[in-house]
Length: 207
Length: 207
DNA sequence: AATCCCCTGTACCGCCGGTACGGTTTTCGT
DNA sequence: ACGAAAACCGTACCGGCGGTACAGGGGATT
Image (cartoon, rainbow over all chains, first blue to last red; front, side, top):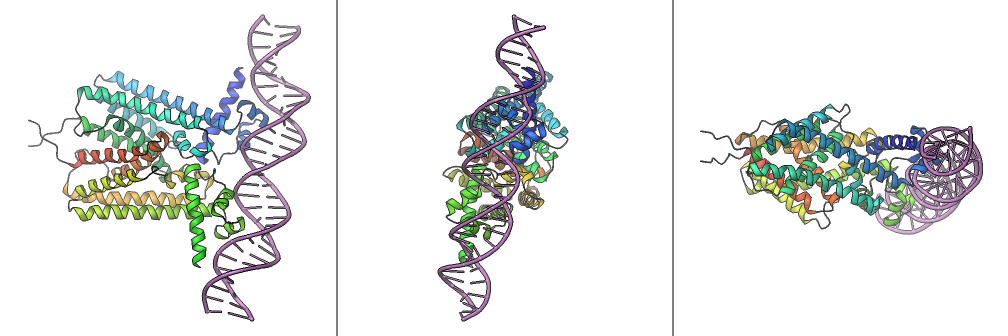
């Protein structure tokens, strides 16, 4: 019962790397079983079909993603009481983490799925949607705390502001992948950080 | 000589819509010829293989994309002399244009390609990279003009600021597709507009 | 009338996703 | 130590798809 999980995990590991580099359609099951060292029968024992693999892959990715965000922002929360400073610190920690990835960010499965919509059933699309909504709730919560203490210097919808964090991450991944500049993603996160800082911090009064 | 171009264009139209919904790997040539009403031989007369189709598709997409940006920002440039106001107006026009798309933005081929890297030759990847660099140059030029007149209120790398525009567009497309909220993309562009406004406009001095 | 361009038709290859199903080993609770 | 369930392996097969090859045909241009 535990060995099964281990094999399953190995398949998912191989599949995730392949899918992020070639998309779902570009990833063949045969190549997965070749690299995993398993047979076709073995593969289909763990996953009914490619759709089931996709779903498992996506769910695992999302879980892992959430865990990372939890860690980063709870660590940032421990280091300061001010919600704004905590958020800005979180973005800095996130940028550092992204910057330390040796080959840059491998890509986001959520983006992969949404550029593949018609190939998957509604189930997967719904999972994907829920993941993005979870991001929205997460960052919205942080901005709500910030807004108790600080007033935004521009009128802004809080959900749209929350989505901006996800937007910058997704867009940053695309750019850094297209340019083959791994550092690009972390840079964009830091630009967002500057923007958020500007939005909430009281202006420096010039004389 | 003209009939050939027409058929070629029809294939590209069908292929673009299909690729943006299902990715390259998920789009079969057979389905393209079925919808175009052409035979397989006819298809391969126009495109040597799927890679050639991808390249033609990408190049056409990029050209069209550039044309749209040219139009929007030159229109904005005509309406005001101030480079900052012109840029902010351009973003507003862009948001309006994106907002008017009936089914939301269909997706960006540049993003599709960069989530498919390993399937294409270096040629296509290089074309993709050049497209993103062209965006960078375009927006960098605008920010340079702005910075002649305005001083940013936060220290910022101009290339990273320029990339932020592309980042928000790419990220916004991903989010609005994943959430199936067509309006999301335009909203994110307007959030970026607020940020740029904040960055360059002199602070409101409170007493 | 000859010559391109722009296709059609047919036949074929090999890879891949997926199914089916029988058999075998490994693991674990008891 | 044993039986049963879990975790595979082997083989055979199907249809779809990307791609190749090649022969030919109609229509416009020269």
